[in-house]
Length: 135
Length: 257
Image (cartoon, rainbow over all chains, first blue to last red; front, side, top):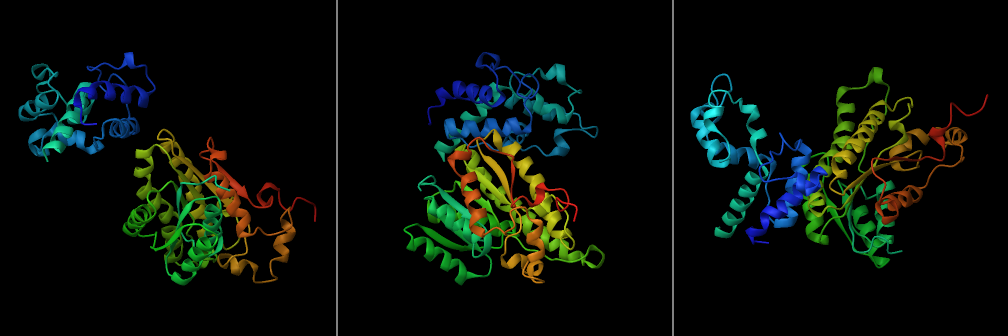
């Protein structure tokens, strides 16, 4: 399936099925880890379901790399592992919904994934699908 | 029978013993079988020919499953040559019998590397395919030795205990992907592997301790494996299935002798 217009519904269903939730409980703005309580194996399940439904293969590690956008760890977080302004600017690209002013100077690096939403996952899948087509 | 028609099975250590019997049993149920071997190419080829003669399809594939890269290549070759993979039987195993007091560290490590390492490596190599298909069966050939003690079997028993624990964990992590993982625990089966145990008196003394009073044939173990692999067991996962003539069911000898 290369019709990315169907991705939001397919991914919402994949998330709901993997987590055993009603689809109404899964909104584009739901954060996977924070709101929906997804753990690592849930994420793996979600990604395999997305692959089946959309043909887009996303590895669990791809999400972290996508969010960090190739910025080295040393520039992404400061010495206390708080995300730097450079890091926040990158996060805003991958997760446009975040309030960078609110998070400035107080977002621990290990909390970044908890901001990732269903919509962010849809965006990543669409990006992958179109990148594959282009290639 | 055709309960496994359209299925492809990979059986590790299938050139002889229980592995050979499992390969034949799965083929008998209609599966196409990849017969893995490490060094006995002729015997593996003989298993393939036996399956082909009965109208089945099989291929012999060399690999040392203790090596993660070889295990991964084995899974890919089985998929390529037989058009997919649906059943993985982790059977390959060795033993280094000896008392703990005198055992060389390399002995238990080698047993662990092959027995548990082989299970881990092949499982990891195959699981992604099963997860993507949301189907698949993994059967680990363990042993009652993994649950009970026997003098001189510490390394082997520990490796099988590891396989038992891994089977339960693997079943849990794969259940949501529709993949079943079980272990079959044979009791005493007169194969090359247990020559040492049976050397003394042909195993007569051991037989007296087995409620069914007989050793298992490899085929009797293999039929249970075929059952667990097939649709009749499709709600069974995380199970450790003893096939031991009742040996591990009894307390002591089961009588005041």
